[in-house]
Length: 239
Image 1 (tube, rainbow, N blue to C red):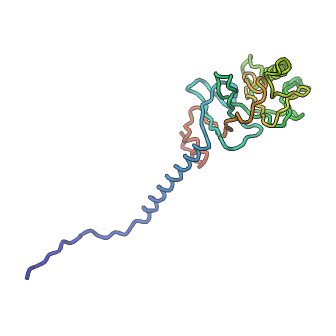
Image 2: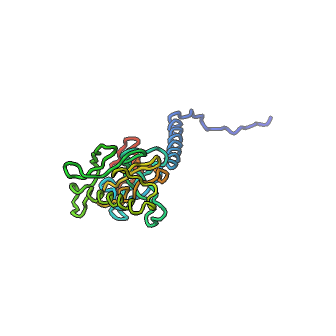
Image 3: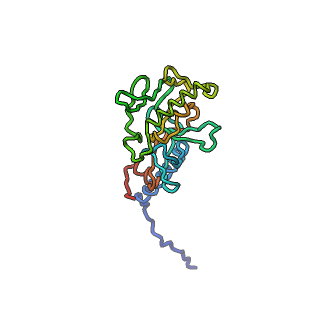
């Protein structure tokens, strides 16, 4: 009788490691969530470097290599005090977009004038607006920065220009020195009032020219990834 031999399998059966499987599944889930978040974030936001000085001290651009970065929300609405990016009229070809703060909404009556203390203020619907975010002549180190006085001069020039050349300003309506915003108009000013070409000089902007609202300001030298990691999770890597 022939002997029959069998090859034996010496591999031992190992129970699955549920902890490692959990870690693996969790890692995959986190990666999917991060990927979906990045896609969703990219759909809503667009980023841009800050140029010019008109929004100092809120936004700073100290040369091309030291610019703050802003993330612009293209979907959500804006209101008083929000910073927005606006597309300029096509005849201004050097600068296609400007970034300013919203101080007037459709239907508002806007005026820039001196008050009883001889200081210049923004007035909206008869009420003086206190603005603690601006560079004015009193709180900047530049002796040539006239702050709100420069804004007032631009505003008075705008009134005169509308009177002299009404055909050039068909949608700019003044009533006894008050600029009356129409249903599709907003009034915007730069925070650095002494060096800002804004609605005080150009008149109101059409709402359909607004690209979006600035939701995040990332200072120069801060990596966006670390900024958003800390913002959304509270984790500070100290970098």
